[in-house]
Amino acid sequence: ELFVNQERLDELRALDEADRLRLRVNCYLPVNYAEDEFGVWFEDYQPRQAFSPHLRIGGVKIFADSALTNEMYMTEPHADGTRGAVYWTPEELTDLVRSLHYDGWQLATHTAGDAAHDLVMDAYEAALAGAGNDANRHRIEHVMAIRDDQVRRMVDLAILASFQLTWFTSDTTPDVEGTLGPERLPMVGRWRD
Image 1 (cartoon, rainbow, N blue to C red):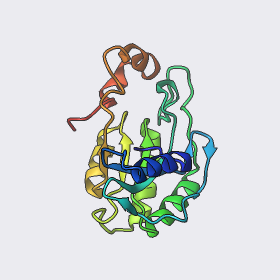
Image 2 (cartoon, rainbow, N blue to C red):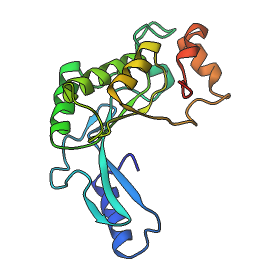
Image 3 (cartoon, rainbow, N blue to C red):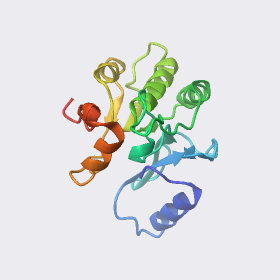
């Protein structure tokens, strides 16, 4: 579950303690959602902390840009001339990622647009500082619109691509094409790459 705030965690723990949690749940604790910043509110918990065989903390979730197609943070402007919504400066995100990485957290960072993807990859690379990603298994959620060089960079840094296959479907194609233009459609949904 990639958005478990304290209230949701309390609910999951209550279900677990009542022996009513019938599946295994890995909880990702959010730092922000859009412009809403929650901060590092989870300091009382440990990375990969297990409450039981059914409930554990998987990592931390960060949102880099908007999930709305017409607000993805893009390198080149959308059809309306805007570049989309981004929630961190490069310095803020790099400092946050570095701090959470050093504390041992797995990071699951939402990106939709290619500019947000660059921002996150830069922060991950700074935090890894030449080390591998095997221990932390940092990942990028959605990986919706990315360039060829970003695919190669993810491979080089061993960053996991966590796809949401239902995000762009045939009924959303007109919206995606309308905001990005037909020339950028090959950047979208590159699951095979």
